Length: 137
Image (cartoon, rainbow, N blue to C red; front, side):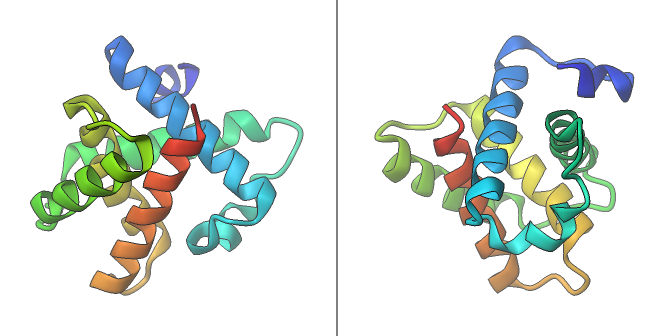
């Protein structure tokens, strides 16, 4: 994924595939109007290279979350929530890598999109990320 290269980062094939799938799902949700929590924030990314712009935003969310600075103390709770949601949506257990990508993307998305973090907003974004991941296959 070139979005990782632009940030001078690398990832294994499973991580790259999870990021691709999440990005594809978010793009699909965006074009159908179903990714409510971030619609306004992502509106400015609609342009000639929107796929690249969305991929870069998702990778940036992932990288911010992976750095975990400042710490995202809700990681264990959100991992459990995402594990359960993904199992229901995918009809299978999510891999550890898939969960790592989604939790890190959640941490980064929350820092990017929410002025005042709250459990309700975090939950809403987590569910939308899980739905996007499911739709991105």
